[in-house]
Length: 126
Image 1 (tube, rainbow, N blue to C red):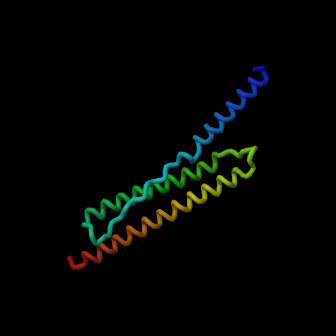
Image 2: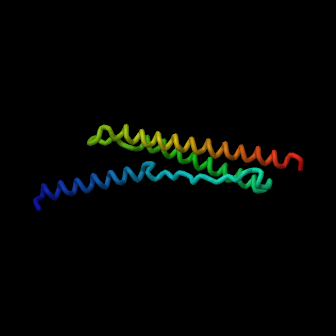
Image 3: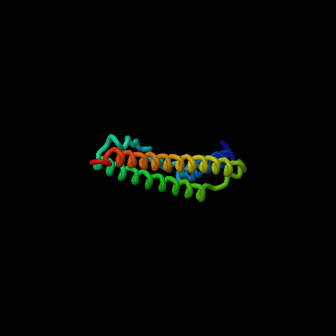
């Protein structure tokens, strides 16, 4: 192999490694929290409802961390000079991930609030 071919191969390997390293620093490694299951509030006691409340709070904190990670990813990802549409494509993916997380967080909050109301209604006379 000639020196110029060896140099070209080495430069190609380094650019691939650099791209992989940049990807490792981005939100490809953002961890989305697992959604939690919220039982009907009329079927659980007060202690169980308080445990669910702690779980919901932890889930919401995880969701906020995931959203912050996506935001950091947006700031870290360099533009790809070989694919000018890459930045727009990555932004669209991040926007879908962000919106899905927000929707899921709102759903978890609504389900928890419904469970609290059901618990109150079931235990009104107690």
